[in-house]
Length: 214
Ligand SMILES: [Zn+2]
Image (cartoon, rainbow, N blue to C red; front, top):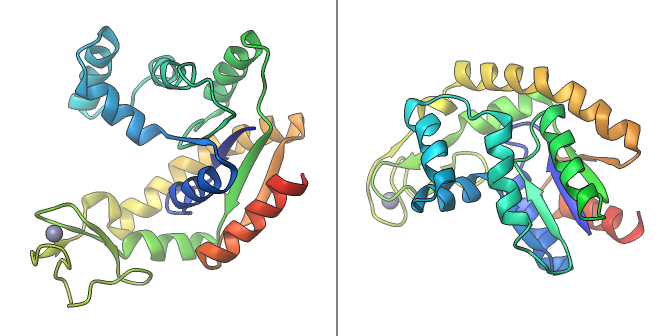
């Protein structure tokens, strides 16, 4: 099975992807991890990628795709779940044309959906340890002691990305690209929507049902 997980920032794609991979014995590829892994190397692709990341610029679709392709084409196993990719219709088309060349295709595009206010609340509740980078959520996964890291005792901070105004902007930018992507997968008949406002376990129950029964 080949699956992409799509949906807004903060909807829990990473967590669900890990659970899917475990349950169905698939590989889990996260675009964030792929980027970090490639940036560690010194290939031509690493250098290209580095140029954009260092300048804080958006990485162009063709370079993002090159990184994805390099990872998924190494994988000969039973299947994979990709989270954080594609983000727009153009990226989806690049992925499709690559899979077609390998005589494959996507089985499902699982779309995690959430109420916008819930997302804004959830993202702006995120705190990070200023020392070890451990991630907390004041609502879902609070530290034992207020504003203090459970792991190392340092102070927790809020990243600029997670400040409410920035979160609202991130969601708006997401939606602009998401609508054409959603329609693209709808037209292929592979989109499956999952309401993600409930607990991780409940959401995964729904995902599991789809992947087991279609
Ligand atoms: Zn810490």
